[in-house]
Amino acid sequence: MKNIIDRVVELNLRSQRATIHEVLTRSRMFDADAVEIKGRMIRVDKHWVADFASCNYLGHDLDEEIMDAIPSALREWGIHPSWCRLVASPHLYQQCEEAIAELIGWEDFLILPTVTLVSIGVIPALLGKDGAIFLDKFAHMTMYEAAKMARDSGCKLLSFPQNDFARLEQLLAEHKDLPKKLILVDGVYSMTGEYVDLPRLSKMAKQYDAMLYVDDAHGWGVVGEKPSRDMPYGRRGNGLVAHYGMDYENDNVIYVAGFSKAYSSLAAGIACSKPFKAFIKAYATPYDLSGPCPTASLASLLAGLEVNRKRGEQYRRKLYQLTKRSVDGLKAMGFHVNNENYFPIISVWIGDTDRLIEASQILFDGGVLLTLGPYPMIPKGQEELRITLTAANTEEEVDEYLLKSFGKVRDYLVSRKHPLRPAETE
Image 1 (cartoon, rainbow, N blue to C red):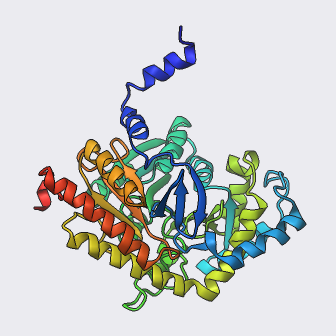
Image 2: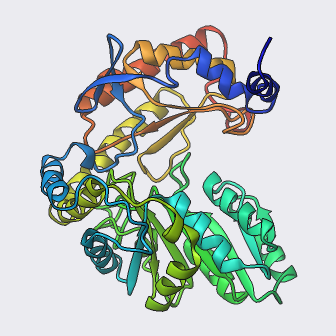
Image 3: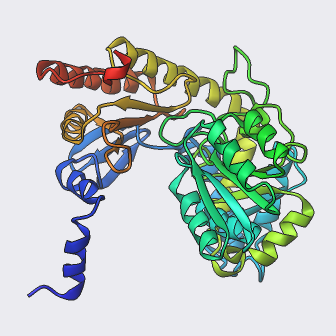
């Protein structure tokens, strides 16, 4: 006889997310046990695959200078000083916060372990019981979870489709008399690499006296100020606000950066004025109740900021070139690729979960590890294969593993008369 836990699990497996459980059991591309790593090559059991699933965009996870900076910090601070931040913080926090504030050009910065903790701390604290949240439906799920917490405290939660500015303005107009209004968006969308239109959103937010909360977990470290033909991502990697040439104070932006992507460090944070920082410390519960960042993460972040100063443009230039090589190669094969700006997130449309699983097996056999986007992670009919490039990848990995294996996927799809593109794009 099954115990109560197993029976509840069985009931839940009949839900919408049962498809993810099915993919987990049928595809080796999910839940792989990596037992060895050499650069961007990973051994799973006895099979080597090229890693196109990592979000370590700048390759900081493999940078020798950054790795060399960690042991001395461990000797000084121990593995994990376990004060909550409200009690005490290793001086590494202040060093990182000051360096990041200087890089983004804003008054101050506050670090917590993850973007999720930033959101669930700051969003409910800002809105209280008498506010309204306007959530982009395509924004990251962690913001939705934070918004639900705020809703449970009494504020309104409203949503609008991605890039539907008319609907957003309608909602803002309907709630214009509320004293606290907050628009939630991704800076760079995590499944497509598309940049949100911050200038337009900021203009609308100011018109209706609203704040604009930007989760730039993926954009930080890659995009930055003064984009040009030579440097399409921009320079310094100081985020999407700088990329658009905007000003934090005058453009009413609450900017959140994540360091677990480009900087390969378990840390995240929020740009803030001195009064806002003091408010977060007092009102955002993760500042008091969550565990701190490990010493190694703070040390790698601090060293990563120095590496970014010395070699960041070199890494971003290589990253752009590898991404362009991949996108252009996939498009030349006939695939529908949702990537127009060559950000290193490449979504290849497959459009069906069974085809997604079959394609993943072909890719894995061909030596490729990437991220699957099945339903309900992705709307039905839009299932996709998600590739992420890093500066630590090589042209050989792109040509001999990624593109060659996708050629086999194309041959498989064509042989069974499956489409390479959604019908509306034909």
